[in-house]
Structures are given as C-alpha cells and as structure tokens.
Image 1 (cartoon, rainbow, N blue to C red):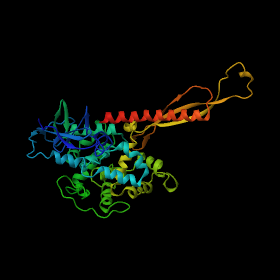
Image 2: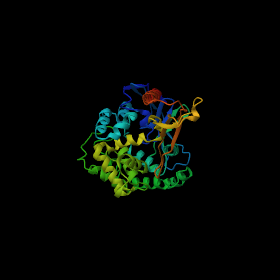
Image 3: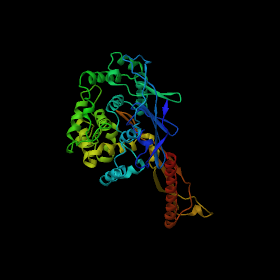
Image 4: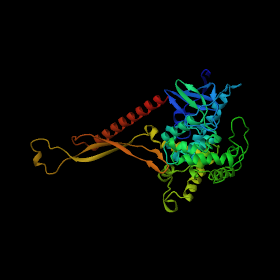
Length: 443
C-alpha cells in the first residue's frame, strides 16, 4: 500500500475545526483513531489531523477491489491497479473541506445581523460545510430518517463494507469507498439491507438507486448541483439571483429530489446543502424547529406547529437573516445544540440571596423581641444538554447540582455586597478555567 508523507497547510482553528466539522452530522463515514481522522474518499484513504496552526493530510493508495455486480453479504472482487498518475490530494483537501471561503468574515457577517448567532458562534468556530458527493449525501440522509448520528454512521459503514470497493487498510481496519447506484439497484439488495438492520430504509435505498439508474439520464443528480459550487476540477458559473425562497436552481433541485423514495423536505434540503452546494438550503427537522421556537419567536399563531407552511417560513426567516449561505449559518447553531458539544456551553449559574432566621446567640437571646434576619447563598449550576436523537424526537434533559452555603451570622448590606461580588468573581474564574481546559484539550 503506497502512503504519501504527511503534508501540511497553514490553518487556524477558527477557519477549520476538524473535530467539530466531522462530527456535526454532515458526513457519516469518517473514523477517528487517537488524533487522526480517516475516510475512503475519491479512490484513496485520506487521513487528516490538526493542531493550532496547521492542517495535516496524508493519502494512501493501494490495489483495490472491483465492485461485484451482485454482491452477497460479504462480497469478494477482483483486484485492479488504483495508483494515480498524478496525486491531486491537496486539491481534494481544499475542495472537500470547502476551504476557499473566509470563514472568519462569514461569522462576522452572520453575527452582525443576528444577536443569537453572535452569542453562540464564538464557542463553535471553524464549522465548514463539506463538499460531499451528491450520491453519498443522498444515501446518508435517507438513512437519517428517525435516526441518530451514531446509528447512521454504523449503517453507512455496513453499506460500504458489504457493497463498496475496498481501498486498503490502516492497521487491520479496512476502508471501503461508497458503492455506486448501480450496485444498490440490484433486486437482492433490499432484502440484504434488511438483514443488516436498515429496516424500512432498505426499501428507500433500493428504490432510489433504481430511480437514479433507470429513471433518469446519466449525470441527472450532479446536474442539480449549484454551478457556483461545481465538482472538483470544473469551472464556476453563475447561479442566478437570490430570492426569499432561494435561487431558482435550488428550488428546482429541491422539487426534483422530493420525487425520490424516502426523500422528504428535510432530506431534500440536507442533500441540496451538503451534497449539491446550495448554501441557502435550510433543513428543518423537529430539532431545528425547537431552535426556531426558542430563539426566533416561532411557535405561535399560524406557525404553532411544524407544517409545510411553517417549514418554509423558518427557511425564509433564516435566508432573510444570512442570505445565500443561510444553511451554513444554521448548521453552526444546529451544532451548538448537539449534546456531544454540550461541554462547550457555559453553565447557567444562578446566585440567590435567601433570607434565613439567624441562630440565637447569647444568654439574652430568648428575650429578643424579633428574629434577626441574615442570608444564605444558594448557587445552582445547570447545564442543558441537547442532542439530535431522531428526526421525530429531541432530548433536552437537564442536570443540575445545588451547592448551599450554610447559615452564617447576620451581614450588613455592605458586607453582603462584598461577599456576593467575591463569590461571583470566583465563579467566573472557575468557568474561565474550564473553558481554557476544554480549548487546550481540543487543540
């Protein structure tokens, strides 16, 4: 197996954070071992890692296996030579990770028009929308129906290991690329996928593959792509004027995708955004709907439930805020709500000065005509954890702990103010220390 030496590109964590971008529900085939992410991609095993100043990449090429025409559950194939004449890995890294846009400027632009984004974005810098193959995005998001990120990743691994070409190994771990639509259009595939645990999604995957292979011209799916975001190696072209509901090409792509089995509005928007390059696509599931209710005043009047009209209204609202990259900005907020990143959110610290009756002191205490009132301080630290568990469900569990300082002697107003200020300063210092520790661990 031929493996290139590690190469590097200057890259700050504010321009790209691999640990966030590759875990936020865009792509489901990346594996992390220690500090390195790896994936079978475009005829090679691409490995990525990062420190505070650079992105490192490495490509491995080897003999791989031809996809069998009718794959059994463990499909052998014949070997072919896959060594490239020219190594285009650097171009692939730039393209796939979508490194051309200045992300710092985009965050500044989105923050300038949205106070909620400005509040949350600093803890989730470096989130980029990947430029995935449209077919991979379509398969991945059909699998996402009523599912969570871990299970989707497991399904994609099973799909690739049973039907995709083997590109090689890292250690003893095999890496398979995506199977083509013609492989999944075989009549035996649906029953085999059910055996592998895909459930009703098996039918959707098989029927969608059949539709693409036999119901459309070659290249139909790629022709739905945003011409401003072409496949690697093709020239950029204009995509038309931006409208409240998105550009005309986006609306056409969305409608065309809805005709495929297992594709509803959310899946269609996910494919438009992450597989076809339409940045204004805003996928709205019940998770994003809760964000819209909590932070953008939806959930009342005619938009009290997630109907088609409300779905369109949420997308239009975000497009009016963030323009033709609304889906990208929305994905940052989506990421901020994922449970896997909950430690990045500051704890909600509430400090209450509670009146208590002071303990009686001295021999004359019983003769006191009125109780002496002092204070005790209760500090409640609450973390709200959210995770996109299922398309039709959302976990918003709350865990909290209360630390109560015991009874103390009566305090004057001045002393109580000093005590409150000192305590608040301590709490803020502790919170800052936790944030620094988290940042150092991520780097």
